Structures are given as structure tokens and as C-alpha cells.
Length: 578
Ligand SMILES: *[C@@H]1O[C@H](CO)[C@@H](O)[C@H](O)[C@H]1NC(C)=O
Ligand SMILES: *[C@@H]1O[C@H](CO)[C@@H](O)[C@H](O)[C@H]1NC(C)=O
Ligand SMILES: *[C@@H]1O[C@H](CO)[C@@H](O)[C@H](O)[C@H]1NC(C)=O
Ligand SMILES: *[C@@H]1O[C@H](CO)[C@@H](O)[C@H](O)[C@H]1NC(C)=O
Ligand SMILES: *[C@@H]1O[C@H](CO)[C@@H](O)[C@H](O)[C@H]1NC(C)=O
Ligand SMILES: *[C@@H]1O[C@H](CO)[C@@H](O)[C@H](O)[C@H]1NC(C)=O
Ligand SMILES: *[C@@H]1O[C@H](CO)[C@@H](O)[C@H](O)[C@H]1NC(C)=O
Ligand SMILES: *[C@@H]1O[C@H](CO)[C@@H](O)[C@H](O)[C@H]1NC(C)=O
Ligand SMILES: *[C@@H]1O[C@H](CO)[C@@H](O)[C@H](O)[C@H]1NC(C)=O
Image (cartoon, rainbow, N blue to C red; front, top):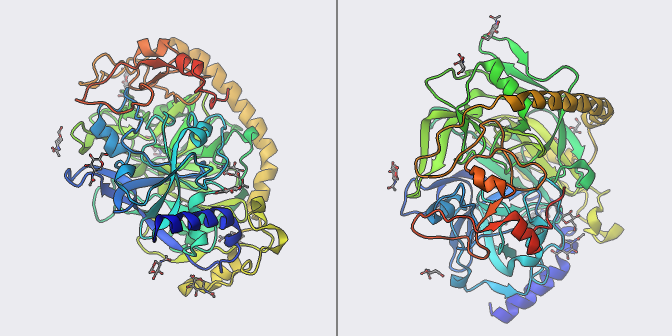
């Protein structure tokens, strides 16, 4: 196909993308694996877990992760903007990013002046708590259209942004596959009829179960969900992206209790009575739970574990424990106000310490152990990727809802399409009321036809209604919890625990108090953070790489040369919301 032809087609596509959504018959579903991939084939254990993908012509191999809070897809090239304070050389950065995409080597990359011009989504969110600089990505990224295929899906040509600024610091790692409400990727798949609806689901799978036989790949299902991987009744809630929720993925849930499940059958609640914690579901985040510091402390007390510090590895911010000490052997159960109970098993909660070595190998250390909970104070609490070792999530942009189940960890698969609903008229995406021949989508997708036809999770479940009713009560509970926490924090200030010794090769780095993690994503809460020295912290706790030069050589850790203040002065920090 000539470049001209392609450009024409793309232009056509860009103009019609959303209209075409309505012509699809709503029956196609794709499953993409979440699995370990050797990012650099010359380094066999350069493993990252994500969705193996191909991009460009000839195809280059990269690893992506789904981001529910982005509309566009952002792919790193060799300017990968890792945070030099925790990612110490370029090889580590390349592996953690899931390989670089060299656009200059691709004959199918067509550059545009910016993302919108290339047909990209016109809006990204800027809610506080989300990664710094998300809204700026739209205007600052190098933009173009490119052939892209995640997992086993077919190539589709779509707009991509190549970041030209630091925006996520690299904690959450890998290329970002935008699956927001106006996702260019989902739109492109619907347009090319690879999927029938803008619905996606995720189960993370399981690692570190102790044997390869019980380890399990996860999957991202596009156009529906995997019925084999869910148990029991679902809970469906509306997606709400509004700023007031404080939840940038649109998926806020209320955790009304957290139970420590001892091996002898005793359950112990670590939450104060009548309290509740509102959490944002952020499946790309690197822990089970970013929780109020006092809750993590309560977990430690209940399980009699003594933390030695915070992780600076792939589970950045997790608490670490010497394996020769007391290591809790039970589970933890999250009780949501909707009635859903999610029990995260011990081996998905307390894991080996995992990092990427300077030589690019993923190293798995049996000591220290890591508790995949991190304490936050001013940042929103989140349920992250490892929550989905035990829960299953479906996001339905046609019905504007998200649905959760208890997960069934199995290799079996039964993909069920979730069709668009006739009442749907999302975002004008279906060209108003006329959008509709396929709307009622009779499913014929294999053995699951019955369910699929009846499904279309447009209706808000009883659970969600109950959840809403409970909401008011929960708000009071949350207030009580907040007061409780504030009182506790006061007390805690006095007792400074000793930090873990700095990593051998991170000279000058003092991890600081090992009880709290701090995201450099907003300016309101400057707290302890692994891998950042006190001297940096004095400079507002934010250190960033030289602009336009995220890569460096020789394993040297450059001194950060810009501070947040300087960034602010340069007008690059307006993504913060305080
Ligand atoms: C729906 O679309 C898929 C993919 O284009 C096609 O294979 C299938 O036959 C279609 N089904 C109906 C009922 O039109
Ligand atoms: C995506 O785009 C839609 C429409 O422009 C916008 O409402 C939404 O906030 C954007 N972000 C996400 C995560 O959906
Ligand atoms: C791709 O581009 C990079 C840098 O732009 C270059 O070093 C490399 O040799 C190229 N690879 C191929 C296969 O062209
Ligand atoms: C969604 O993105 C497309 C481009 O991909 C854009 O034309 C459209 O306006 C966006 N929709 C909304 C509601 O913003
Ligand atoms: C991918 O393309 C092949 C060949 O054109 C086709 O047979 C297959 O159905 C396509 N897969 C999807 C998911 O559309
Ligand atoms: C179970 O173990 C926990 C923690 O060791 C202990 O507090 C509790 O009393 C035990 N329960 C029973 C019934 O033995
Ligand atoms: C934890 O550390 C404290 C102080 O270092 C010590 O007194 C206590 O016995 C330790 N607890 C356990 C369970 O190891
Ligand atoms: C990288 O270094 C670690 C030890 O630091 C070693 O175990 C591993 O085999 C090395 N990997 C390669 C590819 O050399
Ligand atoms: C969720 O539960 C409701 C109520 O039981 C049911 O009607 C709906 O079909 C379920 N949704 C899915 C996707 O299974």
C-alpha cells in the first residue's frame, strides 16, 4: 500500500472511527496473554510480565500494560524517561520499559504534528493522584500513526504518542496501552471488527506460587470477559471519571474491612470499627494495596512482622522483611462495601524481592520478602495489579460501567462477548440515536452464546445500588477513619524507625523512614520514598532527569539536574493537581 493511500485511509479512519463502532455485530472477542517475556532476547532472563506486542514494519517486539486512565497509547523509544534515582542504568530502563521502539527503523511510522492531528483521542485526564504530566502528554509527545498488534490480535494502524517528557517515573513500567473511555486502540479494533464492543477485562495471573505448574499467565480480554475465570455474582458500578471522586481510572470502590486470615482459621480485622477506605482501582500499579500507612502498620502488628525497609525493585514501595525473621503465612481478605470479598492468597501477597539487575537480568531474591502493601498518606489509596490475582475486572465503555468478580485462577478459558446495549449512546460515540443496527448484538461466539446474549452489563446490579446506599454510611466511616489516622500519624512522628542499608551500588542513597511511600505525582505530600536521598528531598522531594535526555551511559547515576521548582518554572508541571 502506498504511503499516500495509507494516509488517506488513516484520515478516513480518523474521521469515522467512532461511527463504525455501531456497525459492528458485537460478537468478536480477543484474549491477550499477560506473561513473562524476555525483553532482550540476547539476555534470556531479561523478563518482564506484560502483554507481548509487535509494532512497526518490520515488526519490533515490545511489552505493554493496559492503562485504564489513558485514551491514547504511549510507546517509548530510546528516550525512555526512567527515574535515575531508582533505575540506575539504561539497560535496566530498557528492560523495565519492555524494550524500546525505534520509530526511525519502521517504514510504516507516519509522523504527524501532534497526537490529535494523527487521529488520537483529544482528551486525557488530569486528576490528582494520576501520574504526573498526563494531560501534557497530548501536546508534547512525538506523534504518528503506526501498525500495532498486541498479543495475538491482528495489526491495526492507529495513532501513538512517543513521550517527550517525564510523566510516570517508571515505577509502573512498560509501554502504556490506553484503554480509557475513548481509547484509540479499542476504537481501532472495533473499526477493524476484531472485537465487537469497547469492553475489556483483566486477570493478572499468578507468580511465585512455588512451582511452575501452579504459576499462571493472566489475560486481558477485549470485547468481553473470560467466564471460566470468574466466580459467583458480579458487582457492577458506574464508571465515574469526575475530578471530585479523586479516582482517575473512574473505578472507585469502598473497602469496608480488611481481614488478616491466620492459618489456624482465625480472622482478625486490621481496620478500626466503622471505618472504611475509598480506593481507586489502578491495575497498572505495582502492589496489591497502596493503603493508609496506619493500616499497613496494623497489618504488621497483627502478623508480628518487623519491616527492614522499602523495596526499590519492581515492587517499588513494598515493605521488606528479612526472610529469617517472622514471615506471615496466612492470607488477607478485602471486604468491599458492595458485598464482594476478595481473598488474596499468601503467595501473591508476600513475595520474593524482584529487581532488574544492571546487566538486564530479572533477579528473584528469596530474602528479603516483600509485603505488597505500601503506606501512603496524602496520595489516594489504590488497589493495584496484584489485587487482580484474586479478583477479576471488566470495564465496559459501552455501558459506562465496571464489573468485578472473585477470580477463578485457572488456565481454562471461555471468552464471552459483551455486546453493546441499545440504550447506549456514550460520548456521542454512536452518532446519536441512529447508531444501531448491531446494538442488541446476538452473541454467536462459541459455546457461550446463551450468557452473552443475556448479558450486556448495562444494568447496574443490585450490589451497586446497595453499594450506593451504603455510600453515605461509608462516607461517615471514612471520616472517622481519617480522624483516626490523623491522630495516629501524630503519635507516629515521634518514632522513627531505622532505614534499611542503601543498596550497595546506590551510593549516597538513603531510603529514609521505611514506612511510607511517596509518589512524585503531586506536590502535596512529600514523604519518605525508597531510593531518594534526603538531600533530594529537601528540593521538594522531586528529582528528574535532564529534559529531553532520559538515557544515560556507563551505569552512572547522574545527579538529577532539574528540580520540581525548575520544572514548574519551565511551565511543565501544570499536570499537578493539589
Ligand atoms: C460478526 O463479525 C465477525 C467478525 O467480523 C464475523 O466473523 C461474524 O460472522 C459476524 N457475525 C454475524 C452474526 O454477523
Ligand atoms: C478519554 O476521552 C473522553 C472523551 O474525550 C474523556 O471524557 C475522558 O475523560 C478521557 N479519559 C479517559 C480515561 O477516559
Ligand atoms: C534501529 O535504530 C537504531 C537507532 O536508531 C540503530 O542503532 C539500529 O541499528 C537500528 N536497527 C535496525 C535493525 O535497523
Ligand atoms: C475520541 O477520539 C477521537 C479521535 O480518536 C476524536 O475525534 C473524538 O472527538 C473523541 N471523542 C470525544 C467524545 O472526545
Ligand atoms: C486476523 O486476520 C486473519 C487473516 O486475515 C483472520 O483470519 C482472523 O480472523 C483475524 N483475527 C481477528 C481477531 O480479527
Ligand atoms: C490463631 O493464631 C493467631 C495468631 O497467632 C492467634 O492470635 C489466635 O489466637 C489463634 N487462634 C486460635 C483459635 O488458636
Ligand atoms: C521486632 O523488633 C523489635 C525491636 O527491634 C523487637 O523487640 C521485636 O522482638 C521484634 N519482633 C519480632 C516478631 O521479631
Ligand atoms: C546478571 O548478574 C546476575 C548477578 O548479579 C547473574 O546472576 C546473572 O546471571 C547475570 N545475567 C547475565 C545475563 O549475565
Ligand atoms: C452481573 O450480575 C447481574 C445481576 O445478577 C446480571 O444480570 C448480569 O448479567 C451480570 N453481568 C455479567 C457480565 O455477568
